[in-house]
Length: 79
Image (tube, rainbow, N blue to C red; front, side, top):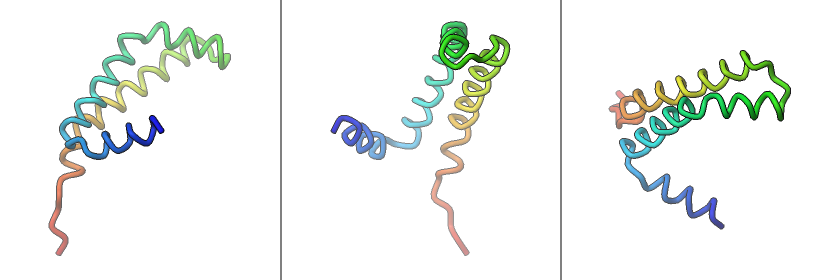
């Protein structure tokens, strides 16, 4: 039930609001970089360097999509 409610809220949010949320996600990933890497090392068995790299990759992807979302999702005329 909670996931369904959350999805409806997300769908109803503006593109700008969603882009901002994804940007915050990326910033939070970087802020918790070491702790997230520790979890990956302990739970998945990744090497620390690999775990840090994965957190960085996800944070940078979130930042990229946050920056590009509005342009990608803007209405476009189709000839």
